[in-house]
Image (cartoon, rainbow, N blue to C red; front, side, top):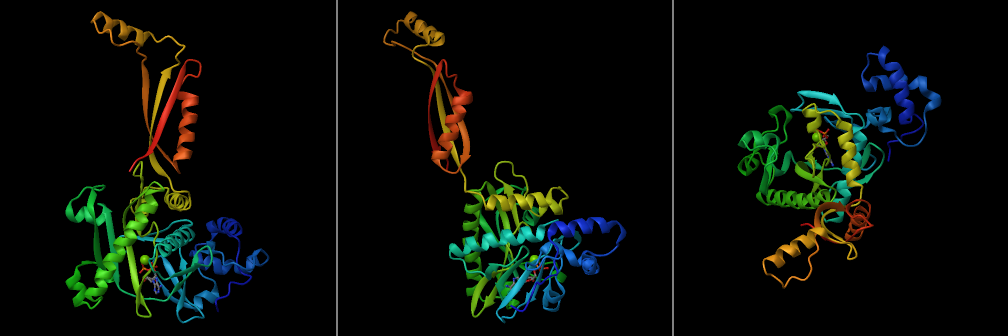
Length: 380
Ligand SMILES: Nc1ncnc2c1ncn2[C@@H]1O[C@H](COP(=O)(O)OP(=O)(O)O)[C@@H](O)[C@H]1O
Ligand SMILES: [Mg+2]
């Protein structure tokens, strides 16, 4: 590759300390400040990797800039067929009306997208992704982007809730696939297959492929996320053409998806920025952590706790006496216990059983007087 990231980059810590020191006195944009700070920091540059923390591109990269979007910069490479995508910390919402920065978003979205593209690849979905090349960069196949945003929805939120008056959180019977015309000047309007044909964006056959592919991606991502206690509420995809094939392109990240925590429904995506909910970087980080942790599944554990045979059970005795006073002599012995019904998540039955045993030993049963037994089974 022609793009070289040589001997000019600060480590993240070095850069942040200089940035924090100089910020109050400089009324410069982030990338301008980086440019001006270059001579001051000569001795601090570490050679090798391009450190994304600069939030902008090195001079060599700027020369090769093909396109700068709201969230990413696209660079040409030595290869005609390949592009370098640089993920920025810039955040926009409401079609660019709200602008800001989300600290570390670039590197988190690059890492999250890389995980998703690799997951999809192994599940047979072809995409532009070639490899992650740095903390903020990935190498991709160059696509001729189809100007359509393909949105899949599993739960009502955002513009669907507004358009149909459906409360946020309403679970849809079937996923809904929508198409939006990717045109910032028009505000990315919702369009249907007739508009798509009139605009000559995709043939009916290509459109059917996009819809099926989007649904397949939904199934793969939803299952993977749910196993990590995340609900995939909705998401946006972009596709493009490469050597006669349609491939998945762009990114899959908290910028382009709605993710809710499966237990609490806490928003873990760009809605935190849109709605000023705070803890935005933390939410993106949480998604990355969940994606890279072991899958968990929900289990139901039933713990039966009873008095040991050697311990007198006054409750059982009392019931037995009442029965006998009613003339029901067939009942020979009664011992009362308790049933504890537990919902628990874990990686597998063995691990969950271990947790339930520890809980029973430590808390649920008194080892001097009580004994216990339990069952664990996965919940669908
Ligand atoms: N593999 C690819 N080849 C060419 N263009 C791409 C590829 N992947 C994504 N793009 C385009 O790169 C642009 C930059 O991304 P982004 O900053 O998200 O732009 P936008 O402001 O349009 O959302 C987008 O227009 C996207 O369609
Ligand atoms: Mg975009």
